[in-house]
Image (cartoon, rainbow, N blue to C red; front, side, top):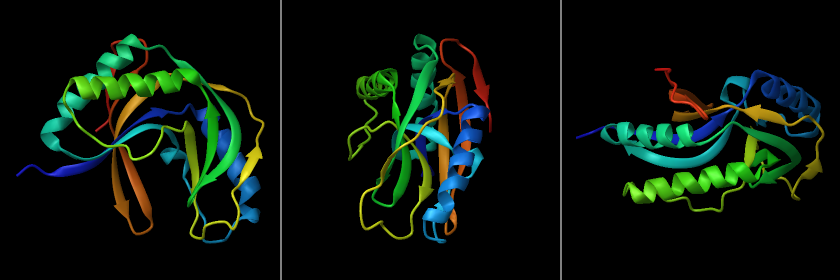
Length: 185
């Protein structure tokens, strides 16, 4: 029997974007419940798709799909637009048509490879910055102002859930627009 891992695919953020997000988190912290769990800088990412529990023997095929897609893609620019909550998630909604195209290319590649996974929600380009213990009484929507940033890498990431939050481990990372694979295990 093959063991399974919770896997997702994400764009990794450059350091300057993580620093801007951390600054925003500090500004927002007094406005939210003390039980709010702010996402640490090393866990900040732009999720493209959550694959769920994948068998270890599926990882090489998934990795190859990502590598092929990365080779055909180019770095993209993400523009932070506004802050929004999705239920118990506080996120920065991003403007990026290219990320939506990248997402659709991933879905198409997985369907073609007959790797089935189910996203039970519409793709919404965002970066999760906090997990809310208590749902806000009303939806949050606040425009934010910090510079757009360039994203140059896509990664296959393993998520391990603990009582105090998830720990993410990059399995492999690929540069967009090149054939360079970076192993991070």
